[in-house]
Image (cartoon, rainbow, N blue to C red; front, side):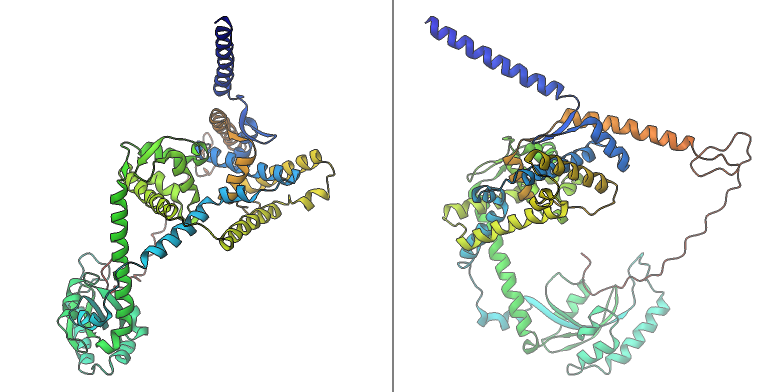
Length: 509
């Protein structure tokens, strides 16, 4: 009993010491430390000076972005200096999003084969019934839309009408395309007025009514819409057959896809947790801080979506989509819909796994080659390949110092817009952070922002103090004592903008 009590007491003491150490580290966070990447550390002073020198705003999001860039670059430097390589398993884990995409596509391709296909023998009847429409038109611009800068006066509208009536007398089904090329005033003129295949509701009501009033192959009289006067030809089945067949099949496939996804989501019973908007926006602001967060965002029969999993999905979106900025600016009410879209990916991926769908050897080789190519290109751009370092450093410690210094110098130039941005792809960043010790200290970020603000304020004050005194006040500066105020010079009136907007027969989106 005594021994058991002793062991329990010793264990509690160890846990208490660990907790105190962890708490002390969390509270002080090495108060001068912003980030750590392997053996390298980013200090509050260094980050503040970088931000001030780059003249970026002293904001937390800016400091966080720079810190994460620094971590990625320094981890790359350490990897290059030590000659570390990544196993296939590590690469596959980092390339999870690409693997998920392949598996999901294979699953969808397999399932979509069972989607019902429309009966092509009924296409002509459906076209004649107006389920989808195909038309050409000749447009004579005469806008009557209220408030439109192109709106014409009644006399001008009458003039355009008379012109349209003259052309109408010359138009028939055989010469329609040529007449459209010659007389139509909109972008479809080059295609002989061809507007393609479109569903009901795609065009303004007056135009659609004019099309539906025609039998296939007929030409209309003048049809007036808010854009002007149209002469319309509803194409014959022979003219529209190929276009209609392709578009109708695509529409039917989209309908089957929507029904499939609706059933899949219903069976998964997706439920988004209430009041998740704040968490989602926090994840988008700093995905690296949430990669291991197990807070549940949404539930389903396929599994839960955690903040950590959401962070990975957000990071996997292509940069050009600017998904993080969209999340930051979106209203809180939009967040559940965003989560449901992410859950669709999760549900399909779960279904693919349940169907035992995976990547084959060709897929795996392509994925791994893409990763290693991305890594090699980044190292080359930063001039920290093994060869680059070996030319100037012989020992491992020398290579580490050289690689770290090159990264620091590059980052200084980057922040001053003196060099091109070198991207570290998301999979490479994942692999690096998984293999090496890396962290960003929030308390250090906050201190760096404060210090950067002070440096910026001091620089602004010094700049203002060094401005030459002048009897003519410099914009934004106070006039010299006793100097007469310069007379205000009126700004020239802005030139009137030419109205280049052209109306179209299609309903505005």
